[in-house]
Amino acid sequence: MTTGRFISLEGGEGAGKSTQAAALAAALEARGVAVVVTREPGGSEGAEAIRGLLLGGDVSRWSSHSEALLFAAARADHVEKRIRPALEAGQWVICDRFVDSTRAYQGAQDIDDAAILALHAFGSKGLLPDRTLVLEIDHNQGAERAAARDAGAADRFAQRGPDFHAAVAAQFRRIAEHEPDRVRLVDATATPDVVTQRLIEALADLLP
Picture (cartoon, helix red, strand yellow):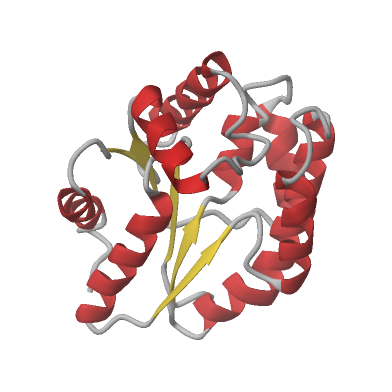
């Protein structure tokens, strides 16, 4: 039995997930909660190695099926080496992306949701966050933020066109609609402090 809490932050490019992961961790630590902040793909030595394969190179480097398999492999190592041990130690884990990103990004292409969840059941024993917070932002605003952040070094996913990112956003909304107890949509168009407060409010029922 895990005694910690597992929170994932999701959303499109430039939504502010990394910024909010750090801010949310600080807010929880101020409440006396021990927090681990991590990311996907990555978070463990093996997963970080796969991250380089997934995010680098040409947009067409991998097929959507290959991407789904690589993400599942990275996640399995991440869960085994970092996430489950932290949860079992009673810590809260805040993860910048988790399986719902695969469901949104590869699901927006041609991968069936059931197939992605079957991979997840095998590789990560079906672990799901206690709460998933999807940061929603207009794609144009997100693209501007991402461009400023990446300074011309956008990864393979950020380089894709607006139609793809619109489809990803729709997939996140679909997941939230079908899993309302776990997944909450959060308006991320406000200032960072306001967005952090919205995240805290979306976690109110889980907070100590």
